[in-house]
Amino acid sequence: MAIDGNLLILAGGVLVMMLCLGLLVAGPANRPRGPLAHRAEILHRRLRPSVGNGETSAPSLRVDGMDRPASGFDRLVRRLMPRQAVLRQRLARTGRKISVGSYAATSVVLAFGTVVVLFLIARQPLALAVALGLLVGIGGPHIAVNRMIRKRLDHFIALFPDAIDLIVRGLKSGLPVIESVSAAGREMADPVGIEFRRIADSVKFGQTLEDAMWETATRLDTPEFKFFVISLAVQRETGGNLGETLGNLSDVLRRRRQMRLKIKAMSSEARASAIILGSLPFIMFALIYVVNPSYESMMFTDPRGRIVLIGGLVVLVMGIAVLRKMVRFEI
Image 1 (cartoon, rainbow, N blue to C red):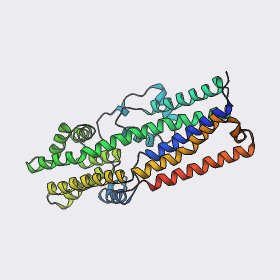
Image 2: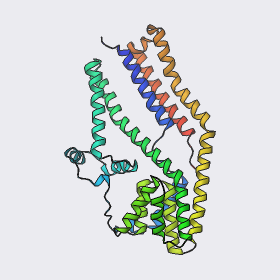
Image 3: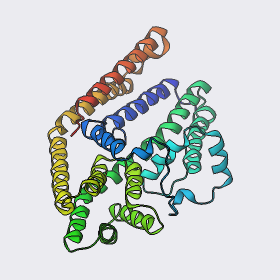
Image 4: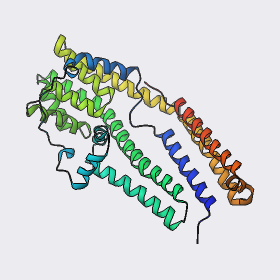
């Protein structure tokens, strides 16, 4: 039995609503580029002048999951897909061994499966099937990767002050910096432990500690770790008590995380209100359609009704974007 086209349009609206609410609740994987991140970037450029002069650092001999031999599909994707470096960096930030080819294959399978279901099984117009297929194929993996990145960074930030305290205790006991970092890699749980172990392994293979630190900071792309590396670089150039500096940094990071959790708790009511306001139009539309389909049939059959529906979706998406901006804060 063929599925009613109105129900498919309604299902498409629900899908758009779910994507919008996902952006409202989750947001992008990269944190807002506020004053703290901006200061970290300025100090990064100031302390690493060799980056802008074209000088290269010592090569890293560490083998990652991304450096494994590529399959035929991976090589094909590398030839056709643009901006592969950006995508490869995003996949590396998940902490999982996800290749560019696997990511592209997942997108293609999701898009093709959606088109087949809508066009061949549900007998819907090809344009609608292709549009929803592209939406699912591109948006689905992107949201999933963002969620993995955000979950890993949150876990890293929660454990990072304890790792700094462990390094401080090693410095106070007379250990060199690299030995303290290696001890933190052995003692701390992942993802903090694996990142410090990568730094220690890179230094063992001939890379300088500063370059290994900045390589990890670029991969993580979080202000907390960048200021940790900046503290080490400043102490190396100016001298001073590194243990005391890192101890103060650990205290600042703990207070910053506490402030973020406090703001999240205080803004939870606003986020819940935004979710309710964003989903209420679709819920009421679906309930009215189930009770009296003919009452809303003109919205699908009449061209003016379709224009109103499209305009309503556009305005709703703009409102959700404004609400999302209002409930997100930079610390």
